[in-house]
Length: 64
Figure 1 (cartoon, helix red, strand yellow):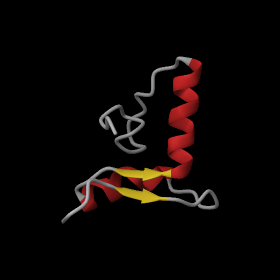
Figure 2 (tube, helix red, strand yellow):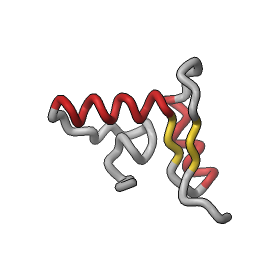
Figure 3 (cartoon, helix red, strand yellow):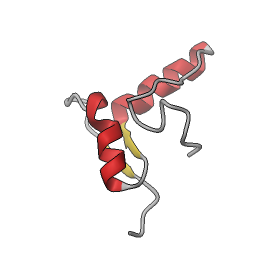
Figure 4 (cartoon, one colour):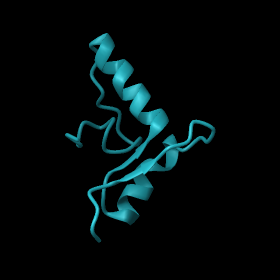
């Protein structure tokens, strides 16, 4: 597979609860636009993002 990850760009779907299973099946980080927005807001507020079960980005496992 020639990719570093997968971007799912759509604010109209609820995907947070299935990001971790998709990552497991895909074998790469999966970033949803809604998830990226939450991650960014947490950073702006100075809050830690270690939320397990919502994908590698929010679990702090992705440095992209």
